[in-house]
Amino acid sequence: MSNGAIAGIVIAVVVVLLILVASIRIVRPTHRGLVERFGKYNRFAGPGFHLIIPLVERMFRVDIREMLVEAQPQMIITNDNLNARVDAQVYLKVKADEENVKA
Image 1 (cartoon, rainbow, N blue to C red):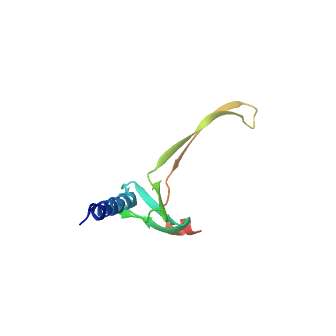
Image 2: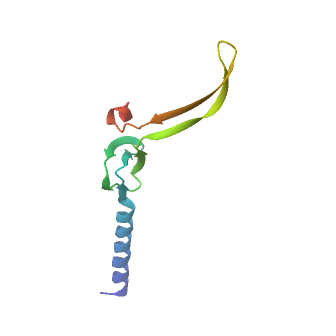
Image 3: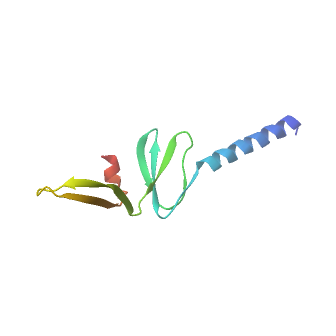
């Protein structure tokens, strides 16, 4: 084999390895992966290792744990003209459901 053929094979192997590394996605147990193909919903990916097609598919990680969102305290006036300070806390959990994404 000539040096040019060996260099071509090495370059091809490096390109294939780069594409393989770029296509591996890891989804943690507390997340779900939303896979889009050309910008449209394709599938949900559960926890574990997943392969996507680079430049064709994108994966978004959705946190499905329960989250706490706190609102800023606000002063309000009640019906009997008294001032009251109100705090709000919202617990939310994302439901990673295919029907919700397709809608």
